[in-house]
Image 1: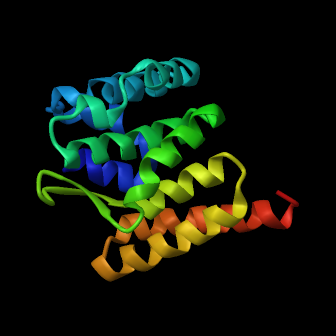
Image 2: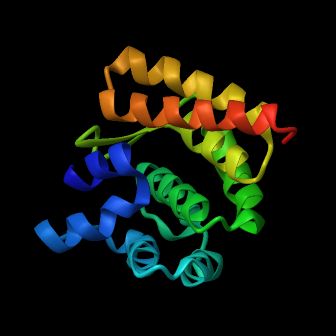
Amino acid sequence: QLLMMGLAREGPAAAPRLAAEFGLVAPAEFEPEMRAFAALSHGQSAVAAAIIRASEPAMQRSRFRWRALSALALDAEIVAAAQAVDLCDRCYDELLPYEDEVVDIGGATAILGPVSFFLGLLAHTSGRSEPARRHLHKALEVARRVGAGPLIARIEGLVDASAAFRREGG
């Protein structure tokens, strides 16, 4: 739960710090994501992207659909943090069928956020401002409805960044 709160507030930068402070128990299906977060914490964006690029797709390696969806959401966080634009479309396409869902772990033990947030994050990272705007506004509505304060602030920041990108001609 602490990892999910850290992601909601700070994005991927929180994962390694929280793992070091509190330890981390994650299903084996999340092993590539945990290694990628560790690489990001050491400033190794290219390594983090390479780990995700080389890993078996989440829907194939996960035992349960909710774990696969969670892994896809974590992949989106990593891809965006690593600025791995070449992976954005792959992650976006894998997440798109779940656009109206909320990603949770363990039957809502921890909520990662609406899939629309991760779609918006990927669209923003790849420079697609209109889909980013649409997905982020939808994510903001969902986050407000469920009272996800830290995630609301993060989404609002992305909405502002996406709007600035559009104003600058992106």
